[in-house]
Length: 121
Image 1 (cartoon, one colour):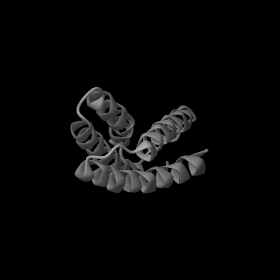
Image 2 (cartoon, rainbow, N blue to C red):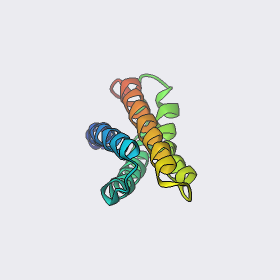
Image 3 (tube, rainbow, N blue to C red):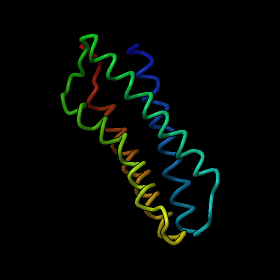
């Protein structure tokens, strides 16, 4: 279970990097991107799966080395859905900038969550 959590974390960070770069481009060009909307949904689902795995691992008694992992993990889960919700109904460029910010925050928090995991005890 812990290995799946670790591998999914790497996939999340890599997808967050791609999403950050693409959303920045979309915001810069002020274009609509169905690919970005789809990838955003996939990322939200991956973050949800990661949360479920993390809860199961914690309930089994394993803990990350740094307890801040329990802050950065949930924050990463909330950043992208919050940005998507805040951007909904706004002008396309404004919405794209807000979603791009959500991707940047998701990437930063994902990296921080990986850094605070430090292996399980």
